[in-house]
Image (cartoon, rainbow, N blue to C red; front, side, top):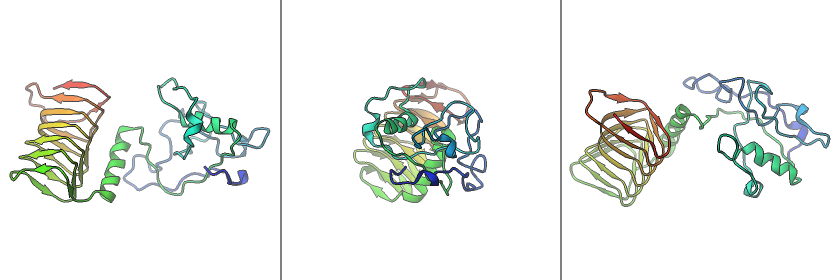
Length: 249
């Protein structure tokens, strides 16, 4: 969005094809035609004052187009209330900008985009970020029985004992990792406790505790989730746990 953008240039003509490994060929293509749209793609969105207004009713707009995001001044969100799904909506913030007299325009996205509101795309975004930006940086403690390979970041106050960590991996601050295998493309948040666990290609948010689980892969755990093993032969696990969830297997 750009206050100096000419409204005549605001046209959504679709998005460039995404890399072939993405879920549906066009990363900006909504999976459902009942998706919520931020703006219509053409000049029909103009109001009587020639400004663009949001259009987010289910089923409206072109199902092959969407708005992947933008920058909204924080001041426009001061008076917003959470929507029916409990979130502050960017569409409401944009409408508030219009109500405040700002000009709002859009620009065509030429590259691919991941909807990080979905688990699989969060994991794919995590993979892309770690692949591009992870580096070797050890600020915590790693004992002599542990083995680190590749680009591994370990935050201050974290203790790694008798574990194997294969990057790219990021582990936050003040964590305990003991008798674990942490595989590539895993991100572990601050203040997590991992004991006797194998994890790969997963995102573990802050405050989680995982104990005695042989293998977790392709998973996203919310804040303060707790996962432990209760004596079963189950091995690979796939899960999507919300904040403060607890799962006993």
